[in-house]
Amino acid sequence: METHQRARSSVLLIVAVATIGGFMFGYDSGAINGTQDGLRAAFGLSDTELGLTVSALLPGCALGAFLAGRFADLWGRRRVMMIAAILFVLTALLSGMAWSAPVLALARFLAGGAVGAASVLSPAYISEVTPAPVRGRLASIQQVMIISGLTGAFLCNYALAAAAGSSLDLIGGHAAWRWMFWVQAAPGLLFLVSLAFIPESPRYLVARRRLEEAEAVLTKLFGAAEARAKVDEIAGSLDMDHTPSLDDLKQPGGGWRPIIWVGIGLAVFQQLVGINVVFYYGAVLWQAVGFSEADALKINILTGAVSILACLVSIGLVDRIGRRPLLLVGSGGMAATLGILAWCFAQAHMEGGNVVLPAGVGLTALVSANVYVAFFNLSWGPVMWVMLGEMFPNQIRGSALAVAGAAQWLANFAVSSSFPWLAHSVGLPATYGAYAACALVSLVFVAATVRETKGLELEQMPE
Image 1 (cartoon, rainbow, N blue to C red):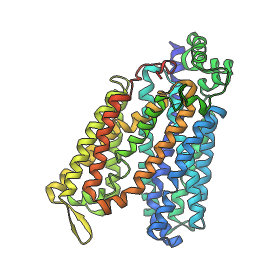
Image 2 (image 1 turned 90 degrees about the vertical axis):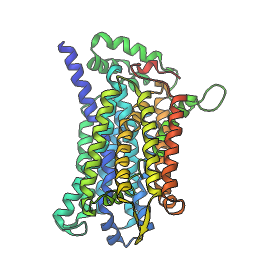
Image 3 (image 1 turned 60 degrees about the vertical axis):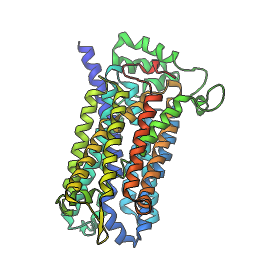
Image 4 (image 1 turned 135 degrees about the vertical axis):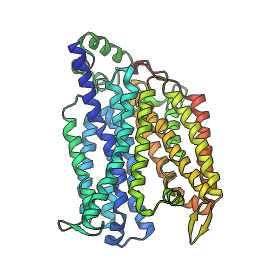
């Protein structure tokens, strides 16, 4: 019993540390929101220049996810996460010190590399060190931490702006917007220090033929009785004649293995349902039912609370009913709520350049938008990351994550950058209708291609 308790404590400690990467993922993505007035004033940026500077994060995320997946096979999961943590700290400092827009854009691009690395390696690492019966719920904590990071950034930015008077006013001789970047260094440093206290992934150690080290790690995680057999099982799932590489993704007849395309599909559909832009007109929805623009922080906190509650429900269900049912329910729910939003915006009219919804329609849109967020965070939000971390066989996990992670961030960039044009040129009803159609297609995709991984050991993952 004492050995089991120690093993459980080791697993929980590892998960707690690894999910700080998810917190940094969310915090770094959200911190930019409070700085934009300051950036515009400090560097004299136009709307286009500001958009390019802010969005420099996303291409960096795609590159970081790709390189992290590859380097994780060469250098180890923990070491690459430590590099990401160092990048979090350095880019936070450089962003706050930035003396020009190009310097800030470079800092944001490099920060994106850290975000991309954390986005794929934290859930993969958790999957590789946790027991199969609880792997889904522990990996799902990543999504809770991402949302917590976003909410933490909103709160910190608000506190700094309130203390200074605005993001342009000074704290300690420096504009508040600079402090909004600098404070990111604190959780980044915590992530770096914490990583020193957790072990390397035993799957990586076996792949590098460091069998004694792998057995020692597995003994701490599962007990001595299981460790030796586990080492042999992991070794049996690997091609010990060569180091994992991108060539392992190919199938004998040419082209990538089908499982790679399933992973890419999961990664891309998570973005094609529009989660990163569905609240682009969020303020309009709230104002339509009587809330003021000054309530934006409360709205963000409420949305974050809804998201976290939905994630907690997912954590309770993912190892009971499985990943595939949650994805199917999420796709159906998002298709319905996005369809309702498209209908609501079709009832809108313009007043003074602003979108105005009739009172009853506004309330319907507001409720639908929040139910949509709940469906996403019940399903595709956490479960996609769980699936990517566990669905690939050991031999190809790092390379497959490199490809799927890069695809996820490229899709994020494509959807985020295309929304303003679509909303203006095509219209909100058609744009939200397109997201609803993508959610419906994602349901068909999951039903046709995704296999259940609940309860399977990583060594048993189907091709």
